[in-house]
Length: 307
Image 1 (cartoon, one colour):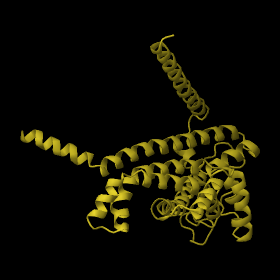
Image 2 (tube, helix red, strand yellow):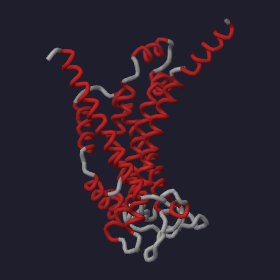
Image 3 (tube, helix red, strand yellow):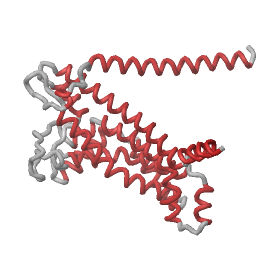
Image 4 (spheres, rainbow, N blue to C red):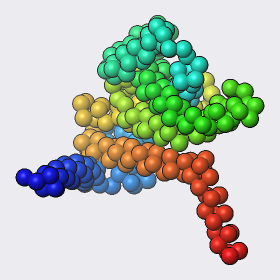
């Protein structure tokens, strides 16, 4: 076979593999959406679940999932960004940095069930909090911390050196260079990583079973801040959507438990898909904004009009 023929054969193989992956993904989406038809109905998305009668909704579980997402990001993003900045800009290569990287890699390889059991011991039993939304957020932060730290570090290291050198040459301090030049250039990658990790937070189950609990109180927005019925109280049990799906499939006693689980899975899949699309869009918009692409096109348009 000639070199050109070999190239065509392997190109065809790679296209076939890509088509198979896309086809498998589309088949998965089609099956989940078909089994969970009707998941978009408001009475299902915002209704209360029922333990005995058919037709329950997922309103409290959906609120818990999004609130868990917000609290976890508030905990994990500052820690990950600070660790990434330290490793990329301030840390000197040596045993300490090597040990930190080893710890991050070890944390990244931990199964979520192990982190959940640790959270049960540390954030449920030792603290005396019981099953709480805050304990679940702390536990899942342990899972997200290594990946987000690596993303932040890589994004900062990928910034061209001439940007840093130009800022320092103009008399800016190291901190000013980091805040005004390096981080704006690295933000698109960082935001993409944050949104992708948010999708993982929304789809986590094992950690929340052991830390956030399998139940949620009847939520009322007019309840006192210290009451477990207040949706904004982080020290209350918070059954998330993924835990609700697991619970329905394992011990659900309502007549339509399988249907509710299928609809919940469809909602979960759509939300995760939206997170991924948002990551693409946010990365593109931020890259265009910080690279001056919009201003450059506007300038070209004005010059063409003047001509």
